[in-house]
Image 1 (tube, rainbow, N blue to C red):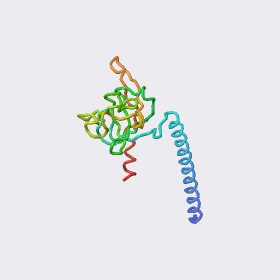
Image 2 (image 1 turned 120 degrees about the vertical axis):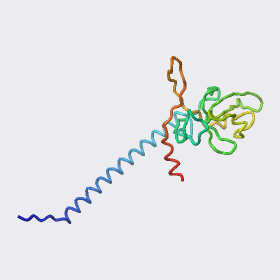
Image 3 (image 1 turned 60 degrees about the vertical axis):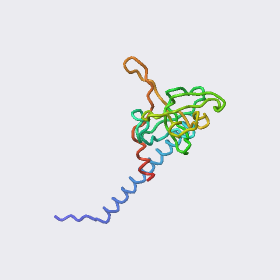
Image 4 (image 1 turned 45 degrees about the vertical axis):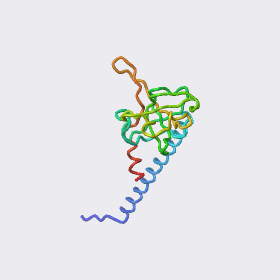
Length: 176
């Protein structure tokens, strides 16, 4: 007995199934993108910052932050920023810098305070590197503070930045 198969009909069914799977996938991606935009908008409002997610670029914050990490940033009042916090600020060169606060100054040049920052992996502070003016950056130049969580290590509390390791490397690929 010989059985004949109508391949034209089979190809048509296969094409319909492919289109159906493609449309489902696109619908899921669209839904996911919408949810992410809503979450970003909510986070942006809650954290009081225009840029709630920042990609770390470079090695000046090793071993705390790595090239390609994504950090969450919020904007607290000036008095809530303390030595040890990690700031994101606009440098004199116009680029965003993510460095730790190593000093807080007051005086006529500071409105109301100036923050001196330094990369954990750098030998000198950012004033000495020419990234910020003397005596430090003003609150207006602060984009935000990296969100940190307290964890217990060997019976003591340590502040650790909340980060998504290396996911930001994808932005380097898409920007080049």
